[in-house]
Length: 291
Image 1 (cartoon, rainbow, N blue to C red):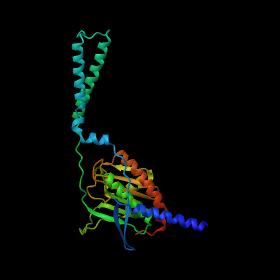
Image 2: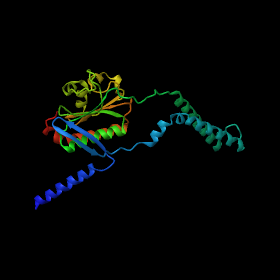
Image 3: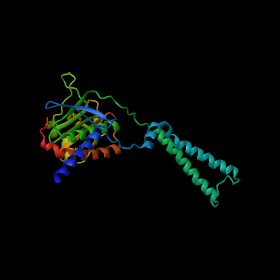
């Protein structure tokens, strides 16, 4: 009886997984390995919500910056016009509640105008999206079971769709289990991507610092950090990098195409993805010989 129940449960779970994988409007990847034939996996990746107000403000910067000046000027003229037609003496009288209200309103109007002038005086440096200088790379250890492969591909698809991520490298248990996106081209100039030297990476100060702290490290402008030399497998013009520890056993290296392109919500979301990947890989990586 228990055996039959277990078989039915196993069949139901497998059917549910296959139905989810075979749903339309999904992304497909071809996974290749020397020890297994090519396999195609499909999956649907969730997308975090965007802050539409923040996006609108960033896209209409020229309108938002002088807005306090318009509001302050309109308030100033409104107070003067109201005082002119209300029949109140033009000289402010401290004993009059109307005069006190007008003075307060004038102060707020002038504050708005000054704030607008400050906003206009600040000229932020223009940040543009760059095209990664490298070759496309899709390396994945297919010795892992299907559930782990699907999880890794889900992580790549999610990050590349909704963030500025253009490169993703995952190292776990001293082995590189995934290298997707753009990578630096090898010195041979044959169009091959530079492979991740896990031993050298793990001996570097960048990796050691992240693993010691156990928290995410965000290099918002990679060109300013000397640790950039420890990441030779990333495109030379990678703008920003997030180093996300995967428990005590691995790290996810996420390269972006925009300076300060990862938002606060992106960073928090990547932390949760790291915890999920660690939970999954911890079950299977130790049981596999990675190549």
